[in-house]
Length: 470
Image 1 (cartoon, one colour):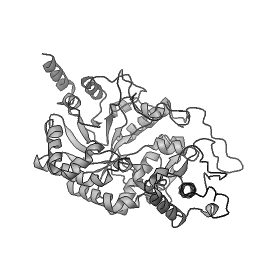
Image 2 (image 1 turned 120 degrees about the vertical axis):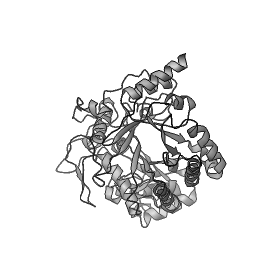
Image 3 (image 1 turned 135 degrees about the vertical axis):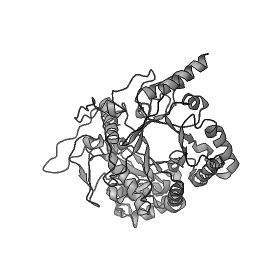
Image 4 (image 1 turned 90 degrees about the horizontal axis):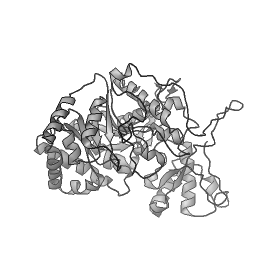
């Protein structure tokens, strides 16, 4: 009797919903040991009026709990299975049969995310991505599900070579021919869309001395004019999404849609995680929900209503990394809200952001002196070489930075202030950082084919001082 009762109850509480404008979904991550049962999670999601859910695997318990609900589901083929899915079409067919066909359409699976942020995966799975996507799609064709289930892959903003201003958005050159062109061709041919993971928090945290908090939190602000196209942006979120649209446009793929598969703001962070905190998280997510559900696209694509998945449903206590990683949840594991924001048009009627900037912690931006631009003493970032990248990548990056990249490499010439220590890692770090700072510390400006990464502590190489701005 009990399983039948639960199934009947879920059918009663789960009704189909639709939106005239954009749509709000949620990421259901489960890297935790204290989360409620999947059946209770489904009830919570439906009660909150959330229309879509994205999971990071195909756990049978979760997919069965979502059966009959009308919640639209995106499932994930994990990065570690990309090789098998790419090399073996029969593996892809078996995976689709076991993890999709077995549940659909009762569990309303609408998309398969093949991998997640594959380009930053340390296991170098990028070369398997496109073949895996094609084999998964062919498996859907075999089961006649290709018209109702889309195939794509979430892309982090680090896949961009340039993102500021938005009109200058471009993909990393080394990814264009082997990955992005065939991916965009595939998405166009199959009627799918680009999945993008966008986190204004990261950009604000690293550049809080130059980015307005109101701009990052989608609060009222004067806006920022894009020097390339003259459009005025009132949120960092819109600017980031339009940078991706611009990168696609540069490759002549203006007809493909974007779905934001992850975005969020942490309610708690370490002392150096500037901007983290409950009030800012509530403002970002609450204002973003209002922005999406009241319709309208981005300045570059005004008719492009967006589907956005908030990250994440719960705080996940077993995630590694800084404190923020465990505090992106909209809910605590006991199902209580971390902060009170709406998820529906009806809920927006009574929603009001506090509408005032408030950084958590001790971060303060001093007033400008003599008309200059103020710089905080925290929130600075540098770009340094990855010593594990190998000599070939480091040398290629160094050559680019000091050549067409326009970095100031005079200080690392023989006899100059930063020549010592005379090592490839030290010289590359200085050149990479010079390029990064000159480019405005944008997403993708510190990559160099995987030979560099961003740090928040000033690099130390002998007596050399690394600049933080030009």
